[in-house]
Image 1 (spheres, one colour):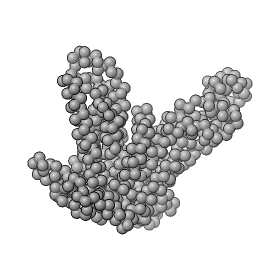
Image 2 (cartoon, one colour; image 1 turned 135 degrees about the vertical axis):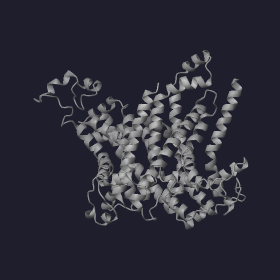
Image 3 (cartoon, chains in turn green, purple; image 1 turned 30 degrees about the vertical axis):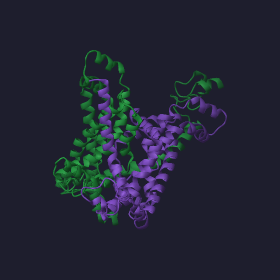
Image 4 (cartoon, chains in turn cyan, purple; image 1 turned 90 degrees about the horizontal axis):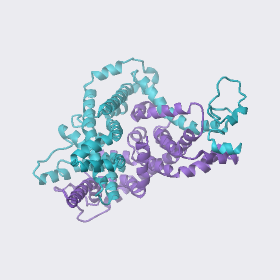
Amino acid sequence: MSTVTHTDEDLATTLGPPAAPASAPQQTDPGPRWRPSLPESAASRAALFFIAPSLLVIGGFFFLPVAAALALSLTDFDLYALADPGTARFVGLKNYVELVGDPDFWQALRNTAYFVVVGGPLSVAVSLGAAILVSSKLTKWKGLWRTVFFAPVVTTLVAVAVVWRYLYNAEYGLLNSALGAVGVPAIDWLGDPVWAMPAIIGLAVWKNFGYNMIIFVAGLAGVPEELYEAAQLDGAGWWARFRHITVPELAPTFLFVGVITMIGYFQLFAEPYVMTEGGPLRATVSVVYLMYEEGFKWWNLGYASAVAFVLFALMMVGTLIQLRLQRSDP
Amino acid sequence: MSRRLATTLLHGALLVGAALTAFPLLWMVSASLMPTGEASAFPPPRLPSAPTIEHYLALFARADMGRYLLNSALVATAVTLVSLFINSLAGYAFAKLRFRGRERLFKALLAALVIPAQVAMLPLFLEMRALGLVNSYAGVIVPAAASIFGIFLIRQFALSIPDSLLEAARIDGATEFEIYWRVALPLLRPVLVTLALFTFMGSWNDFMWPLIVLTDDDLYTLPVALATLTRERVQDNEFMMAGAVVTTLPVLVVFLALQRQYVRGIMLGGVKG
């Protein structure tokens, strides 16, 4: 018996359906189907104790609030309800209807779309470029380059936003000073509604590209070297090899990177909070920033919950679009 | 194009890229050491004329930076230790213990990864208020005490633990907790280090939730304190740069020391997932 136990991983823990016939004599259970977990199995009883703490935390402080947010978005929960929850009333979809008619919301949506649609692909492109440079056969000191490119990822967003705000300063910022040296007139980066979002994108790309670079480096390492060699023999140039080997071979990586980047970019908040406070002229108010303002500045928790759910819905739609686009891509 | 020229161009591009990437961080350090007002000259000097640490001293003496540093260290350490224990218990159970509904439960958890944390924040605040945890360390620590990503990471790694080892321990009469503690945890060490790094840095850098749940500046973590400070002292560039250095240097140093373990986490969580 003990020799069997050592080889059959299922035996002692569950005696699952496909378990060795050696366990048949123990199956005195008259029930029609063999239960996948035996009540007397110490391991499965222990498992409940093992997962209970995490389920308690995730259930109580994530699933419950998410469900509550949906309920909250159907009420007019506001500052008065904060003092006396009894005053909150069920209002159906009123918050969502109001949202559709709220120019502030559309502005936040446009700003967020700008950030996601321009910043996301830019960030992915820079990541891929860096990964290709770092992964080349000719590259020396690969570890060093990787470390430098990755360093911004681990910095504290608030801290580097403070630094970049200073770099972007219209009067004495280094960026204007550098641009001035090549004859570009001073730009009020964070004070001009036209330039504020591009400035924030600049910071975001700098801060994030290292993360995707690491994923691309792993993806590139998986592309068979023979493909490149064969293409080179056929006389394919650098661009042709990139277009017809690297890009298709990296398709799964692109999908993964595309989705996580988009999800991350949808959650824009700290950059405008620190650098522009949503300005100028609300040009950098993102959807999450609007949610924060409505919820924790004006205490319109019902309305803010509706904003949060619209954000969630948009992220789902964006993910589905990417799945579809990239699947149909040859 | 000759191989030599390609190599030169390649390294030229890498050098420019690396310089641009490192520049904001180097500039932050340089400006933090400049005498007051020097960083606001135009054009700004690249290096301090007379390096000084007066702003660092001022941060700790007048802006309570020591307090915030302590808050951040305390919160991040507590979150890391507690969540490492809770996540590893669950991750190990999902990988190695059989129980009814295991696969379904795990899939449900994974599916929930698509829900952005912000959706939960508004009711979570009300919940914390009801529990009396608003404006306390616990208000930051408790919701972070377990994470789906952490459970996933541990589970992926724990799948490779041979069942025969666990079986042998069972035959020797070890309890399930002893098996987890004495057999599984030592084998999970590499992924525990990785997850600890991820969790510590994530908690240290976290901004939005601490901003919401901590209302009293005695309890502010560094990012919240720095963001508040920026709004008050816009023009004190050298001072703010010193604040940015104090805020981000600890995690940067930890990363440089343990980057191999950190990068492995991206691989485990990303490529394998």
